[in-house]
Length: 130
Image (cartoon, rainbow, N blue to C red; front, side):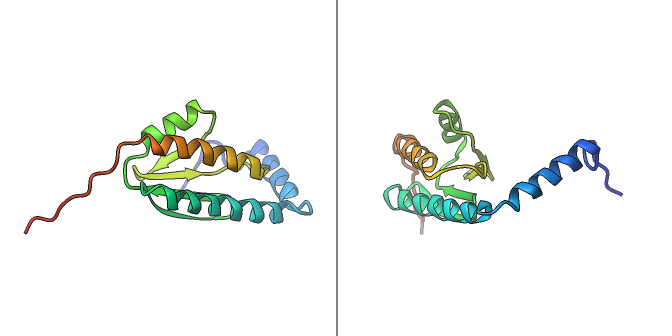
């Protein structure tokens, strides 16, 4: 049996209905797809300039950038710059922006990330010993 403190209560059910209502509004999901595609492409462009980014992945507005180095400091500096994202699995920056995000917000985040990542110490590559 699985239980949860806040699941299934009247407030949560009302919020779920409101989320469904918002998602059903004309243009909402198209906006998510369009801005999500743009966000991912901007992260891919950043990856070309920043070798510290190992991989970019995601779908819609759920996107991530896997780093070569731990991301805790990147999250801290991002927060200080006014951006909220987190780091999972020690090296994966995970972005889950609100559905109302616009391209200009993505551009502001990418500019900030560029500055933060450029200041990181280079990841040292381990040499194989024969």
